[in-house]
Length: 521
Image (cartoon, rainbow, N blue to C red; front, side, top):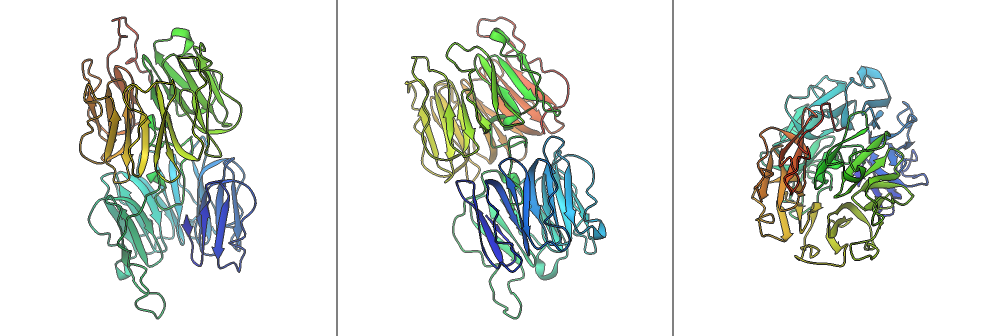
C-alpha cells in the first residue's frame, strides 16, 4: 500500500496494481503489467515492475514521471522528483526537478531511497543515511548513527535506528519532527505529521492534527488496534521493497550468505559466488556467472541468476540440482519462490517421491533436510514435510502472524510481528528454546539456532559442542547456521564463521576458512 496526497494505490497478491481517488493528472491510471512495489506522491505514481524496470505515470511537469531505463531494486515518488536504486551497483538515481540539488545524488551504495517534497534521503549499505536537495529547514541534515529505514517528508525526515528508536530532523512545525520515545519497526514522514509502528503492533502519530481550517481532522489520531508491519522492515514507508539483490535480513543469511552441512557459500559485491569448505560432488564449485542470491544445501548448492533463473551444482542423485526453467525471486535447496509468489520444488525425496509444495501465494520460503516452511501473504506460516517423514513435529507451524520463517534440520523458527522468536519441533539440545528480546532474523541449523538482534548482535542457542553457538562480538547484517558451524555477515561486509572446522568424522573440511574480500549488496 502507498498513500499519496489525494489518491492511493495497492499491490494485489497477483502482482497487479489498483489505484483510486483523485485522477486529474492520470495518477490513478495504472498501466498494464505486473509490479513488485508502488510509490505514490502528490500528482504522480511510480511502480517497480517484476522485471525490475520502473514505470511512472501522472503529472510530469518537472519530468518526475520520466523514469530512466535500467533495472532497479527500489523506487520512490516525491512531489517534484522520483528516485530509484539500481540493480548491481546499488547506486541511487533521481529524475525530475533538479533545483536545489534534488537530482544531485551522492555517490555510494544504497539499499533504500525515499523522495520527499523537495529533497530525498537514502539508506546506505553501511546503514548510514544521506540526504540531498532543499535544506532550508535542515531536512537534509541526516544525523549520524546506524539506521534500518528512512522516510523523507515535506520539510522534515525521519529514520528508524538500529536500536528501534525513531529520530526526525528538519522543520518542526506542530511537532512533526518530535518523535516519541519507544521501540518501533516502521516509520513514515508525511507533510505535517509523522507516524510510527511500534513493536507491540500499535501505531502512533505526531505533529499537526488538523488539515486546512478543520482543527480536528485527526491525521495524528491513530486508532487503538494492532497493525501488521511490512514483512521487510527496510521498506518501512512503502517507498522501496526488497528484491533478491538487496540484503533482506528476514531471510536466512539474507540471501547473501548460506551455511550448508559442511560448506558455505556467499555472494560477493560483484555478484559472483564463492563457496568454501567440503567440496564433495563439486558443491563448492559455483559457475562463473552473476547471481543475486545463493543457498548451500547438504550435498549441492543453488544460485539465483541476475535474470531470475536458477542453476544448481553438486550432487544430483535425487535430481536436486535439476532446477526448472522460469523466473524466481528467491531460492532454497530444492524449492523456489516464483515471481507470481507461488512455490515450485524439484527432485525426489529420500523415499523416491516427488517433493510437494502447497498451493497459494508466499512471501518467504525456507527448506531444510526433511521439511519446508513458507510465509504466506497474510503473514501466516505453512510448513510441510518434503521427505514423507515427520520425525519431530517440525512441519506443525504455530498460529499467528510473522515477518520471517526458517527451517532447520529437525526444527523451525520464525520471527513474530513483535520481533520475538518462536521455534518448534525437535528440542533435544535446546535449539527450540529461543531467548527473549527482539530480532530481525533467525537461522536454525542442525541442533542449534542463531538470531540477528535488532541491535545487530548475534545470539545463538542450543548445542555448542563445537562452538557453533558462540558467535564473536560485533555488528552484523545477516546470519546463517549450518550443521556444526555458523557464519555472519558483518557490517563492514566481511564474513566471520565459528564452530567446527571438521566434519562429523573429525576430518578437516575448512568450513571456517572464509576467503577474503567483501560480500553482500
